[in-house]
Length: 66
Image 1: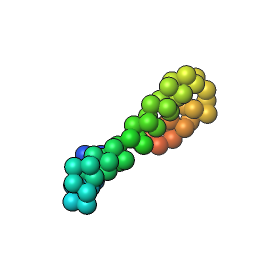
Image 2 (image 1 turned 135 degrees about the vertical axis):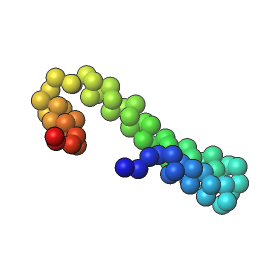
Image 3 (image 1 turned 90 degrees about the horizontal axis):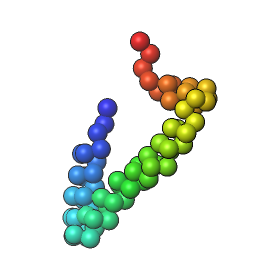
Image 4 (image 1 turned 30 degrees about the vertical axis):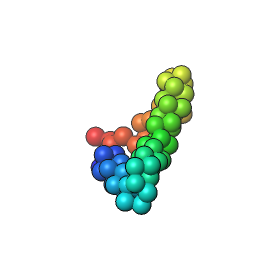
């Protein structure tokens, strides 16, 4: 499993090497913001429709079966 920490750190470092402080800031925001916005948008939708069998299947689908 991959954690977001190394990805953000690498993006920040590469951004800094390419364009200094502003490059590091823009690359960090560019890596972090899309997933953050996706969570902000999708989480309330999933919570609102949690009783829907299709949503339950979608959420349970990626979970490991035991």
